[in-house]
Amino acid sequence: MATNDRFSDLLWMPHCQHKVSKIWDSPTNCINIRLHRVGIPYHSLCQTALENLGFFQIARMKEINNDKYLISALVERWRPKTNTFHLPVGEMTITLQDVSCLWGLPIHGRPITGQADGSWVDMIERLLGIPMEEQHMKQKKRKKEDDMTMVSYSRYSISLSKLRDRFRVMPKNATEREINWYTRALVLDIIGSMVFTDTSGDGVPAMYLQFMMNLSEQTEYNWGAAALSMLYRQLSIASEKERAEISRPLLLLQLWSWSRLPLGRPVKAMKITKEREEEDEQEELDYCLVFGAKWCLSHEFRAPHNAGTEYYRSQINLIREGVIVWQ
Image (tube, rainbow, N blue to C red; front, side, top):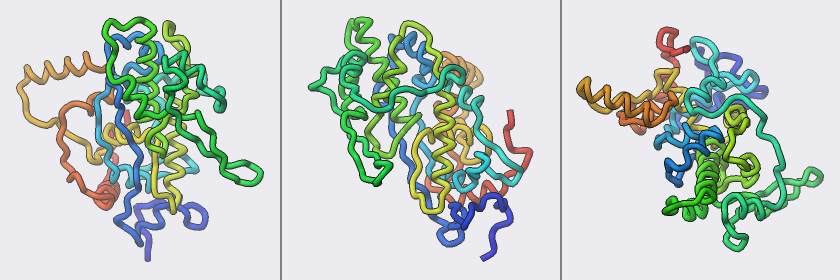
């Protein structure tokens, strides 16, 4: 069957291993997405510590539903060799500027590198206030380099469901130590649910605690670059022909698409008076300064909820220069 001329020849991986090669055989296929809700609520007592960690803006963002059909259509347009989306008008990609504007994560500073394996019992007790006997850890499985044998590393990943149960509310008359525990738990929840979501569905690596030691001073870790590189990697993996799911910072991808492309973009839910609109704009500024927050307010969607990948695929084919937001 002849290929659609809207798909660049550059999309094709060697041996036709790119996901786009399956479109004409399975046009309704949709990739499974892994996304979870942040369950620990934001509390104003955490503001200073969150600002020091660089997570204040993203912590203030409200819940947004992921559009799996939009994400599937974008994955089909991803070219791993260049880390760009191949569109009818040319190539586009998500940048560090997008990460900063949409999520407010820091894009300067030291890389997120450090100890990956080991026992985290003492650090969890010290930085989260959870005694060893009450720590709920999940196993991480890896393959040995020599014989590909699966090896289980226990006490590696913290159970998010148990973490949320423990930090459901901020204690009354909370001490500074309790506020810091709560803040670290909230950041771990954000990391495990939005930024570095894994395929397990209920775990966040305890190793991220090593970047939250001192909450009284501003840290200089480049969380934005880590999130962006993770998204690039996941898009490249998901674009492989036989891959059926994708995880990691998918909300960032969706916010980028809404901000740059006319694909499933929501509109304000109802007509309101000018005075009310001004009040809402001020409320938005007070609530969160990051640009991505505009999509967290009351909106309605023009595209059908179950539009399907085919709908977005056809919409991408219609994209022309004048409808793209470049700046």
